[in-house]
Amino acid sequence: MSSSKPVKLKLAWYRRLTVPQFTVLTGLLVIFLGTIFLSTPFCSSSKVGIWESFFTATSAVTVTGLTIIDVGKDLTFLGQVLLSIMLIIGGLGLMAITTFLQGFVVSGTELRCRLDRGKTLDEFGVGGVGRTFRGILLTAAVLIFLGAVVLFYFGFTDIANLQERIWASIFHSISAYNNAGFALWSESLQNYQNNGVVNVVIIALILLGGLGWRVTSDLWANRKNLTFRRLSLHTRLVIRTSFFLLCLGTFGLLLTEFIEQGPFFLSIDWNQRLLIAFFESVSARTAGFTNMPMSIESISDSGLLLLMTLMFIGASPGGTGGGIKTTTVAALMAATRSTLRGEETVVIRHRQISDKVVLKAVGITVGSLLFILLMALFITMSSNFGSQQHFSFLEILFTCISAFATVGFDIGVTQNLNTFGQLILIVGMFVGRLGILLLLSAIWQLLNKDRIQRQNRIGYPREDLYV
Image 1 (cartoon, helix red, strand yellow):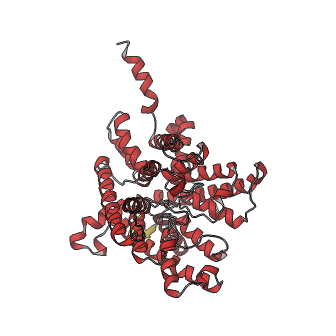
Image 2: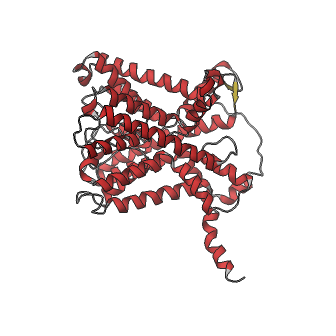
């Protein structure tokens, strides 16, 4: 009897972890292991030290794509394989991976525990988490394989070496589906800006990964009699919002660059402009691939502002991308419409949305905006903590949104930041991928466990507030 007590005490610390706390620890652990392995001579050249490995591992696990190294030159083949594994872990979702692992280490299968784990996958019910995770893996594997096959046979046909061509197809298919934006070439996909197959495949993988597993599974379940009305409200809302954002980004970018005479768009014909604008509109939704020079000299200020808006919104819940999510924006727009109409409830497509969902959307948006502004403030002040090139506020804000929304667009700022500035981006990438509310929830639950239990049994009187 006495020998069993120490074991229980030893295991008690992680059995008491909540899902948000467990998710944060899992993410930090994967980043730590990735940093150690990437810094070894087996995975990288002498140019890649601990700091470069730490930044790259964080960017990979958070599927951001920002990098201070040349992936194709500074990483060995083994290092690139390790990087792609981290992309899969981060892309399929740290929260999904955590849910799967938690089943092995957290005792108890009560209804409350299953509901708690279900929140990590944005589940609405108490269905089997294992079945959901298997579905995520199977969908990802099939789509990545198909994308790699098409890229190999019809896309990267200019690569003569067979092994390099196979690996380039697999790596970029993984990176695209996981909305990571990592490429084996320093200029990303600029050399393939006129290659229709490469552009279409990358766009398709980005969209399928960004839509989320719930949308793809809903479409698959209704494949025999696919009509828009048969789909769930979530699926219809994601598709409508995504389509609107794609049109807004494509035609908006064409318009801004035409009116402001964007240097790059002036140098190409209208067919190329349309393809590149569509590609960048898709990629801005947290993918980070570029098929055009991405700098403050090549894109107008209004074009950069449009891209920042798309980056901030991001992909959809349950997808491989970041941002505040399309459904969050849709919920806020519906709440605004209800306010203007003087209605007391929020209704979307003849369905009433709960106050809890609206409050969560407000919390995500406000928290994300404040965090991005705080990042920009610290990076602006970071020039006092070491040598750093001077950047305009637009450049700094663009980079902060790119990091927090896990996009990976870089306009020449990341590599030229000092260590403190790059550390701010690392924190932003990690917080952005996990979600601002999940991280704050993990901290709040750790510091206020007793207070949370008391609040559950306390009610307060209502009073109006003028806003």
